[in-house]
Amino acid sequence: MNEKQYVPKKEVTTYAIAALGQGLVYSCMSSYITDYYMSVLTLTPVFVILLMLLARVWDAINDPMMGMLVDRVRPKRGRMKPYPIWTAVPIAVLTILMFVNPGFDTREDHQSIWLYVFVAVVYVAWGMIYTMSDVPFWSMPNVMTPNPKERGNIISYGKTVGGIGSAVTVALPLIVGYFVAGKDNADIIKYAIMAISMSVIGMPLFAISSFGVKERIEMPNAGKRAPGEPSTLSRIFKCKPLMIVVISGVLSFGRYMLQAAAPHVARYSGFYIGAKPVTVEDYNKNISTVALVIQVCAAVGMFGAMLVLPKLYKKFEYKHIMIVSCLGGFVSSLFTLVIGWTTKNLLLCIPFMLISSIPLGVINNVSFAMVCDCLDYLEWKTGFRNTGLGSACQSFVNKIGNAFATVMIIVMYLIVNIDVSMLNENKGQQVVEAINRLSSTQNFAMFSLVTIVPGISLLLCAIPIFFYDLTGKKKQKVFEELASKRKERGIVVSD
Image (cartoon, rainbow, N blue to C red):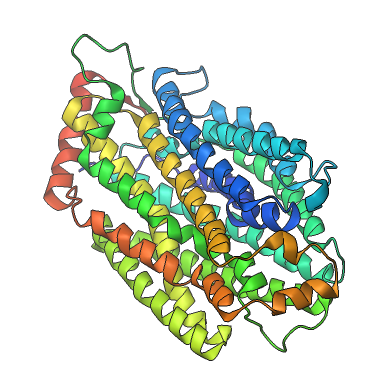
């Protein structure tokens, strides 16, 4: 296997800083969009569900289209490098529009159809432009180095630093929440500050990848399909290892709920840190405190896993790391549920929430590395390398996972009949009293969103990975023979 190191540390750092910028912005949507839509804009749950699902249907078309475009077209500055600089400004603007109401009335009896149109257009447009940057950006490690170990470390480093960006975004509204806790428009202020600051800081950082990364592997453009030759999509769907990773990724949607559901749990689960809140200011501070505890546990568990992954890669297969972390996360989620609900003490749950969060870091990193290995396998087997389309599969999996997590949260509201618009139809003290009257069943349902629901998802995620066989001697054979085949085909790998 090729052990030569191609990428200098400065370039790896540049790529990781760009991932940090992307993480700052992406986490705005993934962590807070449902709380903003339902608790601030008071949109109907059915509309939010339909928006998420229909947007994902469009992504099923949009993501592969972008992947095939990346494989077929090579701009002058590189196959992957131009897209971050092209998309940085549109993503920043759309992120701000996603969390800043331009003047629509959000009161339930006064809402205009144009509010819903505005939300739908901005959400779908954000997803499309984000895909235009995300697919090429996470395809870059494939063209930065032919060394699979070096490539895996680049992905791991990028994901780890990008996760720091996500943690900053997650923490910012919660910290701001303490300072605006006594205001009726506290949620509006904290989300506006989050979206504007993260967009202004994050997108310039993301754009530097267009200048500081070198594409060393010059793959030929994908030409027109010859008569009788399998289509690009056909080759992708027939790649068994890749399909296993994709299916596992879809089943792991619950990992996103540990962060996305935290604001909902903080509002409606009945958990308090300190005395039970009786005023609006106490209630808003408790929301920030409870959500911060859950989010910090998720971040620490995730980062802890990311930091040790490079060492684990030297001793264990990707497959085994995935399975052990998912099963451990499932067991830990059961302990979190039982201990948390029987004691009503969230602080006792912290050790178990930390363990339950380890798969967040593992799946985020390892699944991307496995996709890259699968693309090597596909090239070895067929002679074609569909880097863009393969990365598009991963991008689609991430977005559909976020959508399923969002839908699950809203479905839980509907199942236990929590009407957010009714709870917030009045202001001040009446809101606090209405929330305190929620039943224990409703509280339990909210708490399950960060315990047993993501736990079951992790258990399901582990099942397909048992059938993943691109490991050991087979994997080494693929990479060694692929290097020889590339030389025979005249594919250039520059230093």
